[in-house]
Length: 451
Ligand code: ADP
Image (cartoon, rainbow, N blue to C red; front, side, top):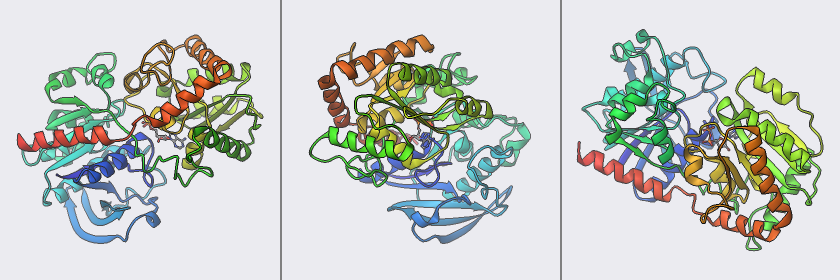
């Protein structure tokens, strides 16, 4: 199958969150399975071109809003088409957060369609609101699949903003995309159900219910080539045949030295890596942090704060030998925290799929999660379920997370052999894209056949 993935992010060079990981991981696995994916991205001014192959200018593509230049290159053998609008609207220090985001990404989607319409392709796969409004442009001409990674972000706008695309009376990129896509995917079975309810639908539930026959859940995986504890270039010590314990200790020591944590193997290390936005359960993270320190554990957090208020809350916490906070986005520190932590927290209020609990398993950090969205589909309680691989709580309240944290810390201290077994099992679990990429490929085939 020849598939164009049109997206606003791709790891590692244009990544804000999980979307970037998904685009890279899924496309690489599709390549492994014999398909031909090409990723279509904006040519961001901040993009690190040193990791890409040479850029070749392919074409000039006009759109109603302005001209764009199409470039071709590759990232480690994965072909890319990069679209550069003439007005320089992607030459900014960050990918999102600009008042004209809807115009920038709708213009990108339109230029992408003008280019893709002339290419020999079987299908176009769009991701989230940023590229959703390509699907009405392609309707009736080429099959499209739209994956919903997080419907909290919808690209809401004034109707005039989408008029240049020929979309009249539309005030929401995601809604326009859901209406027009040949098929829709949601990133986990539980999220797929949640978004069809008034509580989880964010105003789109009725539309999603009306399209439920064309809505399929496809669980995300992780790119196990990029996230590989045996070779990860961002770690100083790697997994070897001696098993997980030397790997965990060596990385714990390296991280402690780097961040100024006391290296003390008699204390458990609890880790968090997240965008610190309300979705991620800010109050629950803070309650767990205090509880861990009270229980004699150590806590390390890496998070880019979503607002000045959240930033101020975390900055007011007193760091020390058992608590380190890195309030930034840093790829290397993220990898090192996954490798060093004993327990990894994901107490989200909602979570479409979540990748960090899967990375944590793969790097031998036992996940402690709230039962919601994709967390409910991937993590099962070690003390309550036969297929257990983590610790799970339900209520989004400090007492609920602290009680579960106490259970986990108790097991770390008192049944270390069980803990080692769990770490071994976690690292062996298949969290790769293999199965889900096959599910996507089967969907592509059905869509092409029925077109
Ligand atoms: P979301 O897409 O909502 O941010 P996911 O769990 O799907 O959540 O994906 C998060 C991805 O972003 C993971 O690869 C995680 O390691 C990474 N990440 C999140 N916050 C940071 C940070 N502050 N620094 C580096 N990487 C981060």
